[in-house]
Amino acid sequence: MNDNDTAKRLLYHNYANLSMAHAAIVAKRKDYGDKDYEIRSAMFRDLMNGTKKIRPISEDDQFLSKDHCNYCGSNKKLTTDYIFPKGAFPEYENENEMIACSVCKKSRKNMDLLEWMDSGEDFLPLMVIRRYFKLVHLFCLEKDLMSMDLDEALEYDLPFEMQYWPEKFWPAGDLKLVAKSKK
Ligand SMILES: [Zn+2]
Image (cartoon, rainbow, N blue to C red; front, side, top):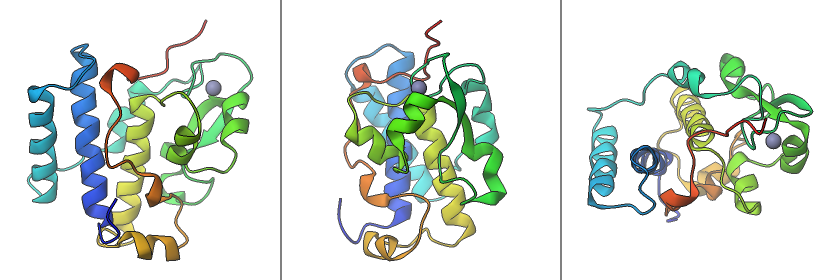
């Protein structure tokens, strides 16, 4: 990550990577190919020049589970977890809240979602990562933060940690769209 990268560039870069990974997972490709890279570059270009918009966050509700942990798929000791700290973005509190098991919740503590994933062995489901970036996007638009760089981000009291956003995306073969129920 480059220090003068803006939230806008890093956010759209990650969103384009999510689109690439989504296409590869659906097609059951373990490695990214030319087709996936084309999807990524088109998505990045169109988001940057404004010809494409990130789809509404509510459209992803169907992918999130209400009866098992959205992180690991467990059906036991269910509770709720918050992508951003509870109450940090009251306008989107419903979208911020997700069913999770208390084991995951305890393991995450107060960590940023991507910081937590970084510290563990498993990748989070793509739809959970997408929700995180969609919330970040809404937050940055609302607070007029799309042009902030990493140094500024470290000075602000933000509900996310930009320094954990990956520059290089994870291998498609290691990712899944959603957490499958362990029942
Ligand atoms: Zn869990």
